[in-house]
Amino acid sequence: MIDGKRILVVEDEFIVAAMLCDTLEDHGAMPVGPVGRVSEGLDVIAAGGIDAAVLDWNLAGESGSSLAEALAARDVPFIIATGYGSVDAPFNDRPILSKPYVSAHLIEKLSGLFTG
Image 1 (cartoon, rainbow, N blue to C red):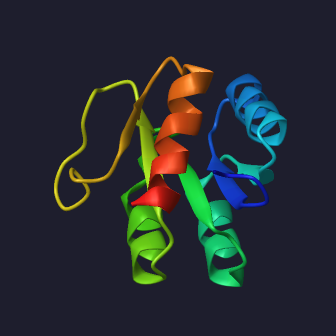
Image 2: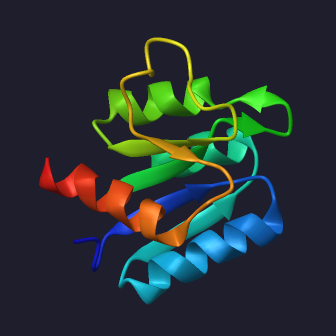
């Protein structure tokens, strides 16, 4: 389902980001990044060429909301990763990936972005 898809990984913890990228590669996706700061993520989103994103909602204490806005404005589907269980509107209707990550849940949520 995610084979060949370019997935932006936005995660500020290097070990977690590396695990996410490995999982994506194991399932045939092409990870973009990882990026660990909002400003970096905005640059990648502006450059285009991504099919979806995994967005850590808290990046070194900074909210991922501006990244979510940029992704939504470009019609790029994304899942929000958070240890808090939920996020506020207007993104509370987006798929949530709970931390700590479970690889099978990551793939299931990402696949759902492409199958409706």
